[in-house]
Length: 391
Image 1 (cartoon, one colour):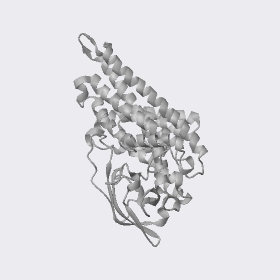
Image 2 (cartoon, rainbow, N blue to C red; image 1 turned 120 degrees about the vertical axis):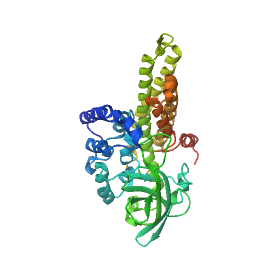
Image 3 (cartoon, rainbow, N blue to C red; image 1 turned 30 degrees about the horizontal axis):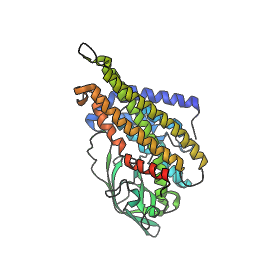
Image 4 (cartoon, one colour; image 1 turned 135 degrees about the vertical axis):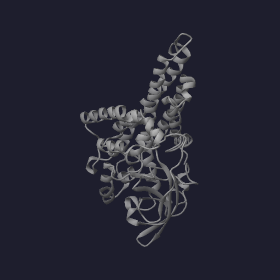
């Protein structure tokens, strides 16, 4: 699955223009409103951003991973709130259905997801189960041809916007094998969404609790139709999601480096540009080196992902080598981004602490990238276990 190169180049150019001409001028407005204006969301739908990763047969654009990371890099150049609007449709919200869903489930949901008519969210995290995903407690009890769901999901991205959730629930005993993945429409009786969270950064993104009180979900809504496969589905989805986030991290790093260079060229101290001072140049050099290393790693891992997807087709699981590289890529790029953002503020001096300058917002926004879709410490655990062959 890939878009032909000529068409892809046209898409990438259109995304670049959209970011710079439409999204970047609206960044301060989004920060003040803590929301993304509806006219911009409609433009995103028109551009096809909600269906980037969904095959053309289901109404999407059908990018492979190598192409998706290039688009994500461009989208990462502006406020993360914009990408968040459609990010769950492109990644964790839809990919479970695309990878493991039945033909009927794909036909019913994927065209709506690709058009943006339906926003899908991914509901895994719970109040007592974040990094330890296998310990989730939300129960799904069988009652004839339905499952009755009870429990709470936490920090669910796009929950206030969602029309449906890819939701993980426990259908059997303890551990990963007792988890099933459900498609849960948001309109079902007993499902409610909490007050949107007030966050340190990423104003305009929407996260909230999802509460399920005796929500009756048809058994046919289990992704793939087979209970007990949900944890494997979630892990496959996260492999792709971690690569997407890594590309976004590189886009944010590029923006911070560019903002820092522009400031260093303009700001004068002691009768000369601060960019002429070697210590400023050193910080810029370190940031540029980490950006280039991270972006090269993302692109190489995207190639591995596409090759591994072909190699593992029909195997029902992800490629362990790809999972290792995806975790290593997310660990490196997001940690490097944290250092780049810190240097960006330092180069700006006192101005970097004032919200008149973009680096102040970027510094707050990027902190979350080291937490969601697996914290840096979880990535270390995944990598370490894979290297020593631990269970």
